[in-house]
Image 1: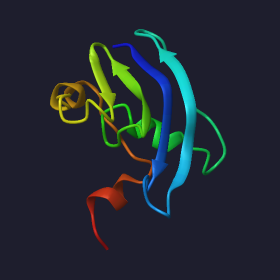
Image 2: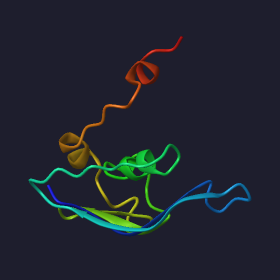
Image 3: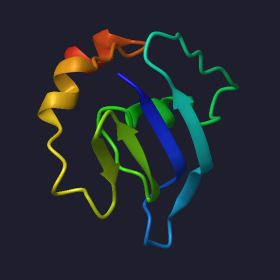
Length: 102
């Protein structure tokens, strides 16, 4: 499954006075059969980048292409996420916080 980011930008709270720009013109190709490592400092946008891969969040600008599926702001309602999510799973760093409330 090839994954391509094409000039992806993302802002939390886009369109509001509290907008925080996180990703800036990210272009990367993750070919089928290869391992891609994403490393960086805390707060550098690694988790935000990864959340785009199965549509947990959609780019503010640009697009993420997974095989023939295009995840973008203008295709938001057209793209079916279920087939993508059947092939791409996530395990968060602290999954116990995601699954159980204290």
